[in-house]
Image (cartoon, rainbow, N blue to C red):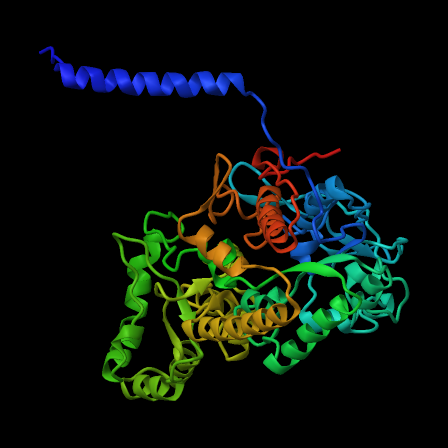
Length: 513
């Protein structure tokens, strides 16, 4: 059906065409485009110093290497600052693109990860970076992988003699001006006119990466407050301007969201056929759990769906004694009853509230040799011990592989407290703040657009996180650099251009020049 326009509508459309035609003609007569010049505004970028940890250093794919350092966030920022009077930005480059490092010829840091077509894999190569071969600075990038807030103030943190004993940092030992200096002293000796500071992640991340097992405790809030305020006071004492980042929710990164709590596949030929035997083996224990009023701890593997791993939850009541006594009362021999109580006194199936750390994917379903030794010591034969030492199935996953809800709450509480300290410090000093916490939450929720690319937190193909699930890709670092530049422009009336996503990769090839 052909629809006719009435005369009123016809003239209405004619009027619109004439108006747009007039505008177009006017536009043709004036083709001048006013461009805002690149300026430094109220900031002086001539001596830019970046302080922080691995996120500042350019750490990616579980290592520090030349290509990653060249795409570090502060180096990207410095290249843009150079357009507005910024000076040279020197970085303590590693010796190769292998990653890792040696100490007196012995490998102490592993090579980087690469994508082998199926997932992350470690390069089978030997690093040529020797920590004992000190390199000459000064260096503008003072990002020290592994550093916590108070480490930047610690004298001797770069003493090579302390690296082997864990008293010093290998990355800083390689670049420190002398064995007794601190990171902040080496930074301030360069009289910075502008700085970036992103520190505090490791103050909670170390605890999270260790599954909250206590081997790497969260920094005390009083210590963090003192260290952070001291850093800000020192950096701004001579009038230097800068930009600061807060601490993201580390539990939202791919390292903690990739491995599902229920990864045991009944179609797996190494697991599925064992399900009937396993379920029969746990029948007596499950009856005890029910009798003790905790049926939710029962261990049952499904034949038609993925099952959760069995974990040790140190936050729940230890029922070892009760399990042992109940089994003995039911006629189980004392030795078997005692071992069962020992193994499953705080055991339960994992659930959606538990977070498994990324490395757990390589040990789930594998025999735990330390557990075998322990069980043999309790009187079991080698064969019996092996059967009861299968990680996540017959042997509950140890604390270091799982972040329990209680441990996640500790991390959340510390992160909130530390960010309050950061916000207070930057408010008093008038520094702009990049809300890395909000940015990461956006990436974890729906992703963020970076030009035509969507950055998500999925491991390998999400684009935001590198293959270690903790550190950004080059494109992720570029996005963060842009966020910092926007804050700097707003705070200091500067006009520093941002970078394009397409210029920064999400994967590094196996072989790099």
